Image (tube, rainbow, N blue to C red; front, side):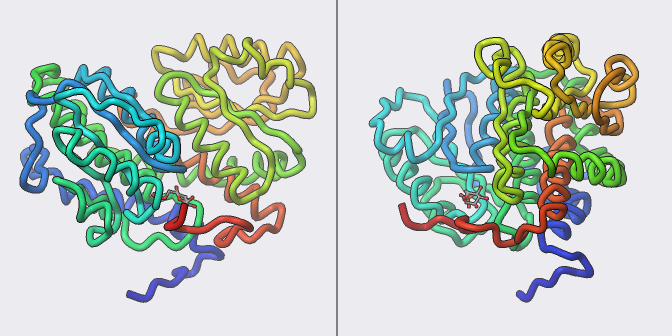
Length: 366
Ligand code: G6P
């Protein structure tokens, strides 16, 4: 199928903008009208599983890290996450009752495929979350869940990431239900949170101007830090990755609580710090870390919802106001500012957004 930019300046811009529609389609492929989550056959018996090993590369790895928080909190399943290039050579023992789960947009990443092959005959079940159903990783899995993101052209992954997260969250809910770790009310709340996502993402995208004006300031920086706590930590990692991939600005992400163990030494008035902090149960903790940055003249760009900005926005260098959302879907919604900050920063710098130097869309050799 031929894909064009549909009036956008770059494929990446198009792929960011189409996320509400693409995601609604992904949801429709897994959710029945009465709120049941359906997986393709053969399903997975989550009562026969005691732990998960998740393996991926790049952005897909950050989707796995996000899903770890969900699997552990909601389905009470311990999860180990690793980058494929490390996993494959470490010869990790795979205990009985382990589900091995591989996440890959292309389904062809050489390291991820090798990690999958390592698990063959060792893990109880091999599962994958992929965008290309006829890919090697899909074919070699016992069960492959397509993310239905459509063709992704931009080298920096965007819509595949949010679709991976969405499918992984539905898998978590399915696992929680089977394991009896979720009540019917919680389940109904989470399903309705998922259903609200396309509209929420539209509202997020509507904040594009605030992201663009923040990005113009970020474009002047040499180094940028991203901070997040809990499930926002992988989002901070993804924000930093997107930024370095396409704007070539050095960016690093830290779990907010780790700031004092090293990176705080970097803070001065030349280092912008992007703080991803919806007003959730960990908000106060993240904000106290943010204040440590501001006390050292660090320039903070705070990404939060109205209540969060109201409470902690004073004295920040930039603010991006996201719509209120249920906590469970916050990481999926906050992918939008992570992507758009990187995109507008790259545009301000005039880099080749869709074909960044030295990077390939799919890395099929080691
Ligand atoms: C490359 C791409 C990234 C992608 C990674 C993993 O590095 O540039 O955007 O996240 O590969 O690709 P996969 O197809 O396995 O998700």
